[in-house]
Length: 431
Image 1 (cartoon, helix red, strand yellow):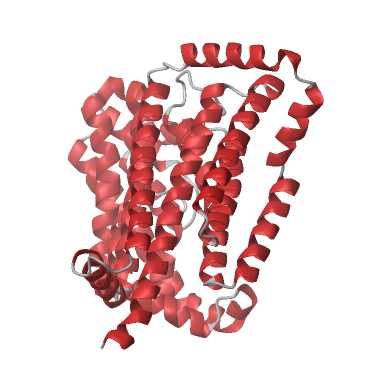
Image 2 (tube, helix red, strand yellow):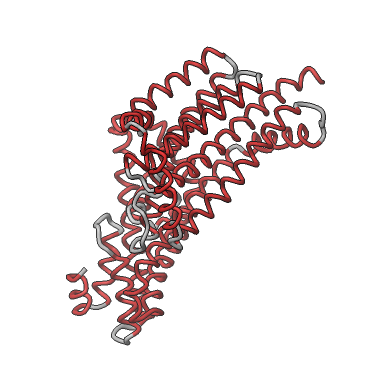
């Protein structure tokens, strides 16, 4: 950045133009920092704001256009010849092209705000031969929005930029992630529009028009939904307490109580309990859960699918939520282990196993006993983690709550799919 600043001070608008052009031809340059610095110089009247906006926008436009033509001229032959070696053969490229022609225009506008994505967005547009008029309209809008945003922020904040730069960058990244999730949901809904419409109609009719049908299933779904909403509320409350740093009294009290409880316990017992959350132990549990699902042979493919989604999604959820807290609350006093990932996966894995046990037997007394044993296991595991492995009680509790939110959400989805399958099977006999 110091070299760019020096070049900017010497050559002004030419440096700005070529820096933006080169970055969008895949030369990594920290242009957000450069653009905000240009805004600060404009605030101090060392550069003209309008000329800066035009120079940066023009450089970005030229760079994006060059990248488009590189993809247009070289991309198709490359993928035809070498695409099969990277799983991007002609058939897959055609599917990507069809999808990108449908949604890529909107993506182009926002892609320039995301480092790494903006470097390839224009090339992909060329490779799939997005019409040049469409590319120019949406890509150029995206370029001017991107460059204009950072220059304007630097200009408005002026000398206060250094104070707010980290927070602005964080919120821009968070906004980009949020918009990406919203766009993904929109794409899925649009692609499965008819299926979703039909499913919602069937669920509505079965719930509100056929009152006496499927009472047991509807009650179970209602209970899971209630638990899910309560857990989400609890999760939000825990995040608020984390930001306000209000967990200190809770941690001290729980640690003291657990230390008193375990004074007479052999250390080996606590160590053996904590081993239950190790990856080998969880792998054996997952394998046993899969075998149990197959043996029961009741919608086994659906339950196996959700087993995979629950576990893989749980791992991704635990990593992403921890990264999000570290990223957004950097510099604040927060625990580096909030929420505890090991306790999250412990609850998710054993919780799904418990739900499959309950789902495949009809004895309510046994179900109550299984639930009781599950909560005892969670409690003893908490004592082990806090007393023997110095896990902060609030981190462990947060792991349980976040894991329970994920698990209950997936169980709710599983039961809705199961209910929908039952409804569809019952339709021919009633017609």
